Image 1 (tube, rainbow, N blue to C red):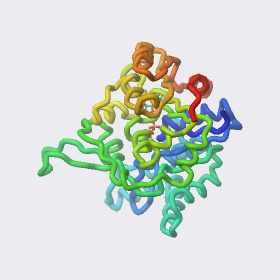
Image 2 (tube, protein in one colour):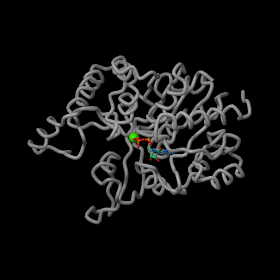
Image 3 (cartoon, rainbow, N blue to C red):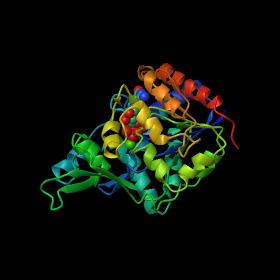
Length: 328
Ligand code: GDP
Ligand code: CA
């Protein structure tokens, strides 16, 4: 199983990929990354999930924060705030700004995001082929109650919900603007069709993996590939480990549990996308429930505490993939 394709969000996906490369340094890995978190801010195009994967695997990430550059300074952000320009809540570090400047210039010169990402990766050498899910503009917006708005509701960019509101207000609805009209980026469908195995890391099932699956053609490509498809639960013991998967699952009406997410993705034997599902050992009852529903599931430790623990998760996922019935 040398050709591995991974569907990734930001932090959860990036940490999982670190474990994958630790276990299999020579694997041929393609990462299809969520771009629905992307935003334009102060005239710059920012791609949080692509950058988190690129900086993490390229050893430029701030390990404590889990996003942005190590040894960062915040002069640009402070100067912008001194001018009183909005938004002030978005974390735009000085080193990070250089990445966004390069990206924005290239986009404005007409290069697609795929080519821009490839160019940025020439510096960072992440050890994987990093692909955006689409070259088209797609943006996740979150609808929350707002008594001051005429409709009683207000929609905002996902980043505003996450960073400014800290996901503390219930999300009533998640709307992914532009998703239905988007096309997979060049190489995405080929990476799914040509893989030996496809892995779905413990990324956010709604606003990371869910958006990738929503790009027209991706879901069908996953259902059609001869490769086994195995996922790992981002919910451990009934809640997310970090991030806001719980809020997003509640917004789309999916049970917040390892079984709930597994059954939401579903089995390829029915009308879903998975051949196997890993849950944490503390959720062993969920594995039984998911298996009983027709999706083979196992319980193994799923906390990405260090590289070895994460590599063991990857090994368990590959073992489950090897046990899947051969297709095609
Ligand atoms: P984001 O784009 O930065 O939010 O990152 P992802 O979508 O890739 O992953 C975020 C999700 O990863 C979180 O909502 C958690 O549910 C999950 N997660 C983070 N750390 C761990 C971990 O150690 N184990 C498991 N099983 N899930 C984790
Ligand atoms: Ca994200």
